[in-house]
Length: 348
Image (cartoon, rainbow, N blue to C red; front, top):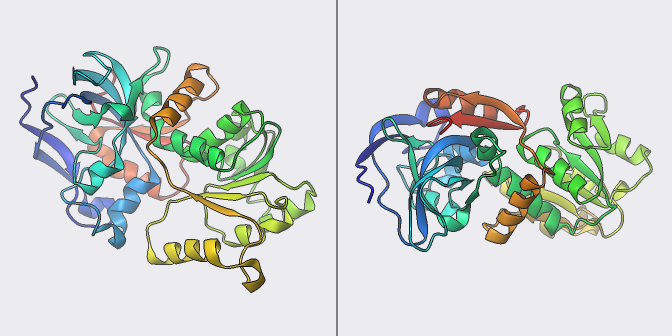
C-alpha cells in the first residue's frame, strides 16, 4: 500500500505562456493507491506534444480543463504498485499515456514528482510493457504521436503500394507517419526542411521535398504529374493545400489532417473544410479530421511495430525536470526534430 502524501509537480491554474503560468509546486497532493484496474508508475521520462502547450495557452480550454492541472501525457517508467486486475506487477518497465479525461478532471499529467521519486496513477489500458531493447527515453516518446500517426493512416485506409504525401515529416507525428507508412509498404513522399531531409530519408521516405526550395508547394506537386492516393498534412498551416488538393490527389482519395489547434479561427476553418461544397469554393476531395482515440488494440498494434523494429524513436532533445519550461518554449517554436523529452526520475 503506497503512503505518498505530497509531491512536487508542474501545475497551472490559468492560461498563458508556459513561462508565465507553469508553477513548480512542492506540495501537490500525491496519487492514491491504484484501484483494481490501475497502476502506480514511477516516471522515468515524459515527452511533450503540441496539444500540451495548446491546452496551456488557449482560452477555449478554460471551460474544459479543471484546475490545478498538471501538463503532459506521455511517459515511461516502472510500476511500483499494481491493481489486482491491471495485468501488471511491481517492477514492470512500461510506457504509455495518461487519459485525456484525467486532464478534464484536473488529475495528474506526467510532469509530476515526489522527492526523490516521481509517480503517476494511470489506467492499465493506457500502458504497455516496454521492450527490453528500448530505452526509457525512447519509450517516453511513443504513445500520443505514434498512435496519432497509426490511427490517421487507418482513417485513410492506407493500402500496400499506395503513393502517399506527408507534409511535416520531421516532427513528432511526422517521423512516426513515415515509418508506419513504410511498414505498410507504401511509397512515401515527405515534405520537410532541407536540414531534416537526411533524417527523413533515413526513416524510409522514398522522396523528400524541401519546402524552402518549393515555396509554391501546390504548383510543384502538380508538376510531378503523379497523383497521390493519400495526403497527410501534419502541419496544417496552409489551407490552400487542401483546397487545391484535387490537382495532385487522385479522385475520391482523402486529405488527412489531425486535430491540433485550439482556437476560434482554427475551429471555424476546420468546419468550413468539412461542410463547404466544392461548387461553393470548398475542397473537391474528402477531408478527414482525425482525433486520437484511446484504443487499447491500436496501442498494442503500435507496440508490435516497435518490437518488430519497424518503428523507432527520433529524439530532438532531453531536458532536466527543472528546465521543463524551456522544453515547452522549444516545442512552441515548431521546429523540433522528432520528440522533446523531459527527464523526471531518469533511468531506473
